[in-house]
Amino acid sequence: MNAKNKLLGTVYLFFYAFLVLLPIIILLLGPTLPTRPTLLEISVSFGFIGLSMMALQFISSARFKFLNRPFGTDIVYHFHRQMGIASSFFILAHPILLYVVDPRLIEAQNNIQSALRIELGEFAIFLLIIVVWMSEWRQKLKIPYWIWKFWHGILATVMIPMALAHIFIGGTYTNTPLKQAVWIGYSIILTAVLVYTRLIYPIRLMRKPFRVKEVKEERGNVWTVKMEPAGHPGFVFQPGQFGWLTAWRTPFSDSEHPFTIASSAENKQEVQMSIKNLGRFTSRIQTLKAGEKVFLDGPYGNFSIDRYPEAKKLVLIPGGIGITPIMSTLRTMADRGDQLPVKLFYCNILWDDVTFREEVAELEKELNIEVIYVIERPPENWHGESGFLNAQILDKYLDESWKEKGVEVFLCGPAPMMTAVERALLKVGYDEKQVHSERFALV
Ligand SMILES: Cc1cc2nc3c(=O)[nH]c(=O)nc-3n(C[C@H](O)[C@H](O)[C@H](O)COP(=O)(O)OP(=O)(O)OC[C@H]3O[C@@H](n4cnc5c(N)ncnc54)[C@H](O)[C@@H]3O)c2cc1C
Image (cartoon, rainbow, N blue to C red):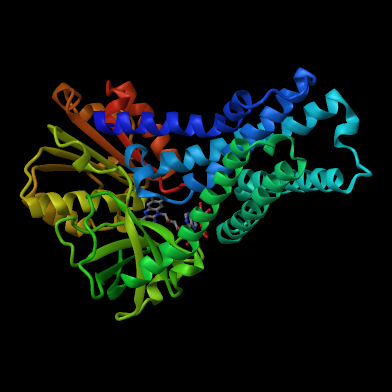
């Protein structure tokens, strides 16, 4: 992270902490409430902290580019997930502590207003438990991603107004204009984010469609979709960045998938994505026809050599379909005539499935690059490296001049490979700041 992004990131984090604590700050600044048990006040504070964190979740998931810039999209999604869990603890602590103070505080009331307030609070907590449970257990429960995403959005959108109503109906914490302003402010921000994500953002994408030029089969069950901007100049991206692709539907359907832009960043007239057939959406890619309209939102991500203009050498380590950001990097370097020394460790299970291996051979003639193939199950008479990439293989090809400050390492592949290679890189002497990783899983 460069100094500017570090500063921006720190400012965002402080602002986040300020917004989370704002309801409590206003409470402390406002007129003193009649003395009540400390535990009760702590319980209410936890409820407020949890709710403001939950409300801010809408911002961290809205894919605002200004937020992604300093941290990277994966970190923002990770933050979203961790804050979701943390806020649930605060929110759940609220009724538990109330019960400890006096069980009657959360029991059914005769007074209609109090009864409604308690029921709204309880129902919001019930929805929260479902949201967190579905998110944490999605893969174990084998809930398809798109079903999870649909319900995640709906339940979260219903839950927050209920929690806000729970606070407003109580009255105690909205009894001054300043306190009301905080919660009304939150409600306005939430509504604005929802209008942006559900209406403005899709309309903006609709206005800038892309047209499929060609769909081409590659080695390894991968299909390359070539697209061109339809009636607009396209977008500028850095090699290694990714975009969200919507096909067969409009952007209002909220059904986009993330894929790396595998083409050269120097060619804005054509965007290529190379997509491995792995599931519901990716298995249909090969049926896309030339001339079909698709929608692309991008660019996103920080996995780019352009973020390290001072780099002296590059070590690129793709595994399987993790080659896509690396192809974009190599193609861009070739277009730029960039002769930076590169070592490419390309890991695959089978030699026959090595996507783009013919093009990599062509790029070897243009670039200052040494390519080392690491094949898990190599063919007979194989002369390259076999098995998994490990510290021994890295040491064989990388002398000390390849580990100095200024050598940047880019790693992208399946999760188990990345964990093992990250460990091996540290073992052979790389500083973790030199190692940049891209995981093809945001959630
Ligand atoms: C930054 C990034 C870059 C990527 N680049 C490439 C690439 O260049 N080439 C490539 O083949 N794959 C890439 N992927 C992976 C690709 O996004 C998934 O393989 C694809 O979305 C799976 O969709 P599916 O419906 O075919 O599979 P499914 O079987 O439905 O889903 C498999 C898994 O993919 C993830 N996933 C599914 N749908 C979505 C979605 N809409 N949004 C986010 N995640 C989802 C979920 O974790 C899910 O469990 C990238 C992923 C990320 C995060």
